[in-house]
Length: 407
Image 1: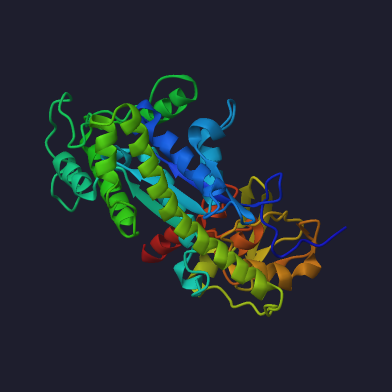
Image 2: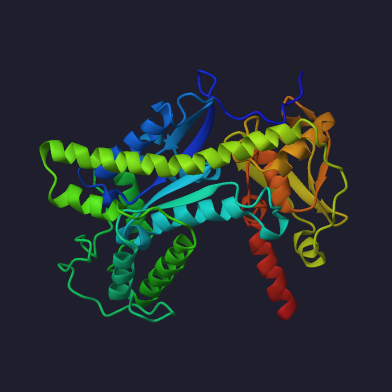
């Protein structure tokens, strides 16, 4: 019966440590499979080029919805698990991406779990996971499309509807956010329709919600240093002018350019992991636990919380002002490459209470996110990951508590 290693990242069959990348895109933009073909070739180049990862102990493992979700599996659950376990979000940004509820969910869900609770972050832990917006369409044209579709109002008031035959500046049908109706592709199309993810809803309230969602997601995307430069010009050339050998040449240019950019990000995450491994071998964190904020502790008092991922299952409660992860909780064996140093230090400090990745006693934490990261083995937002028996998040309970105090 062994103790878990503090640094035990997921590996492939050849022993390479895996860096997980989630490829987020709007399927209707993937004309002639251009987008995914370039993404696949880019990530393959990262793995096989000697000037990138080929001579290292690391490899890229990618998630794309069209190939990574098997028939009979729960779509949203698989997507959320993949987002939460990924080190990098590679998001192909187009006007349609901004307008798609599912794409916005992918971007925002990754961002929420990447950042966790900001007040807990240290300089070493700050945003260890990375969002990489890849501007398939230029930012100026995306801005112009948003203004055309939703108007100038900062409150998200929708612009006057135009005929569905009119197109957006990038040549796509403004009304079209539907996916191709075959096999797995149909699943996401149905989800889009059922969730109201169609531009021409005819419902002013839904239009306003869509506008607000699109604008807030776009503002979040612009906060990150994304990849643009010559890329949109290459894409236009690929769609309009390139043929034969020129077509392959343009694709190769895009692949090499993207691979070089992504490698810079991947290399920084890998170096952070190596630094954490080095420190983890010598640093043991004290077991002193700071109490929760009084208001948060009051909001969570009396509730039992659950956390479930593909490789972990935990139960927790609040006692004496601290967040307690209970005996019997199963913690994730594999850590993501970008797992915060604090998680590794906590696992090392509490190694005497971990046997075969199951807790043999209760462990106290200073926050829900610290507890969630310890259990899930990655950067985590505990306020969304821990839920009650009634499926309420900690954010929900905080909001209810504040409203109760005001009434």
